[in-house]
Length: 240
Length: 221
Image: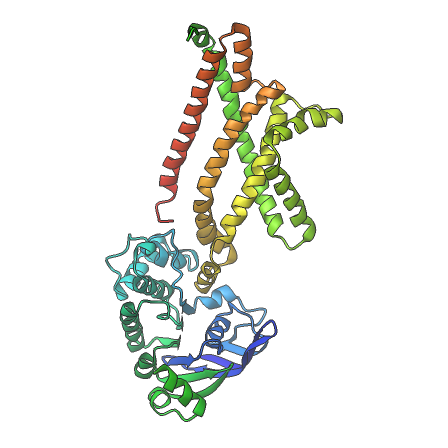
């Protein structure tokens, strides 16, 4: 379980998270929606300790993420992350991209790492791209590579930071289909997203972020189709 | 044109010219190796938050890049000589070339380092890589691709600039050519052959470098 407890986070004088609490259970899919600058992405960066927090606590399987004695490199192996800009490693083939971390971080043998990487790449529909360099692929394919690369570490959780926002519209579908597949397989996910249809259909719960706090959280269909908070209503009427 | 070419004397002295060419390569390779090591240190110093280190690096880079190579060599040979430090022609030219290489390469390295987007670090971190692994597998390999060709150019530049050794009596290719032509008065022949030798050396270096690049860098960029 991921447990975010009253987290505050500032960049200089700018307070981005102003007391956020959120529990995500194993097997649950939670979508986080909200305007830009509302702190949605920052929350993900804090959950896997890429960004430090100023106040509060984040527990992943009862381990305090930001405690000094926590081995953050080890902890991140549990938390797969996919970014808005897919961040593939341009100097490596697709297969090398996916096999690197299992080999050097999990210390698997080369054969084992390659086997897992191939399996995950086939999983996201890149079975015919093993020896291609990522820069030769479309944004949608690179984003699916990023998903496979994270999955190859066998994470318990996936953190998805606006994974379709930088894609051409016709490429969004293939990436969302991949995420849908993961959700069906029972992967625990926190998705920061602007895709309201995806949030409604795939997630169990939706959280609406407004100016650094969760203004509304509830069952996915209810929050998207029948929001209770006037702020959520206003936001949804604008994005539709 | 009345000039009559006499090539025989040049070919008789070929062993000496080849020896000079060897010294040219020798000094340039050494100047490159030492220059790279110092440039790495200077680049780190320049990006360091400690003002003293970054200022030392900045002064070095500015002098190296904005004064003629000829002055550097004179400074090393005659300038230090005035203070009782007598360098051999070889060491004087080597120090000047190292000084300049380090100055130029510092900026090359710094630029290469800063051209790697910060998102590559976050991506590596998110996969559980340690900082050392991130540099070893992700940052440095990409950086090397970006600085490889500027480094090759700098090496070619060193080879050509080492010809200034002629001014302090160094026996590299130009110095040797100068000495041989003054003994035989076949100025044009000797300098034509020397120029061809420089051309061949630099072309071979560029060719070798692109072969190596093809082996090292299989991917894009």
